[in-house]
Image 1 (cartoon, rainbow, N blue to C red):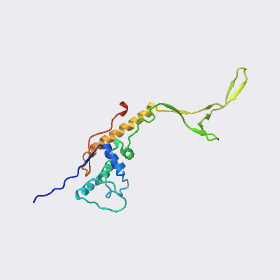
Image 2 (tube, one colour; image 1 turned 180 degrees about the horizontal axis):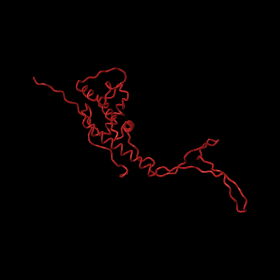
Image 3 (cartoon, rainbow, N blue to C red; image 1 turned 30 degrees about the vertical axis):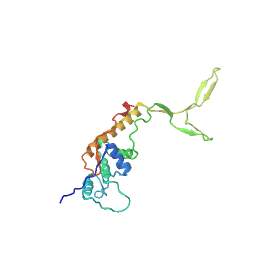
Image 4 (tube, rainbow, N blue to C red; image 1 turned 180 degrees about the vertical axis):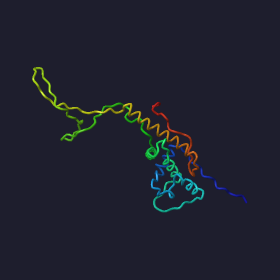
Length: 212
């Protein structure tokens, strides 16, 4: 009698960015930092990763009813994102990574790339028209050509500059921080034995502004 062994399911290969978008945008996984410890034993994540993998081996899981839960692999991805080390941005970066993944986007390093002068505020006239906000300065005096003394109230429109080197630097540093966090997660996830996916090498461009 010949034994028939089950054929293992083919794993879907994903880059780290694709895996994050699948987990958060498709499977709707959520980050749970579990500050109160209320879900220490009943959620997929951190120390409970082995529980999810054990469920894969058993081929079953306890169903408590209600809405459909994210795929176990997606929960593992979210759990590893939630424990991102502080040196890679910690919880703040983890939350941003989840937001960008849900919207299938990345930090926009192009924002306000061109320098512009914009008013600091706007005012509406009685007719409903928008005008630049002005600010009255203290009364000033001057003498006209005939020597007569006159007064007037000067007005200015405060402005600000967008697209400055400082703004561009902040945007690019944020992109580089995101890229560094993805590099760490790629290494971290490469050690996980998933049931349906395999995270493969492949990262976004580290400096897309150099080729734009």
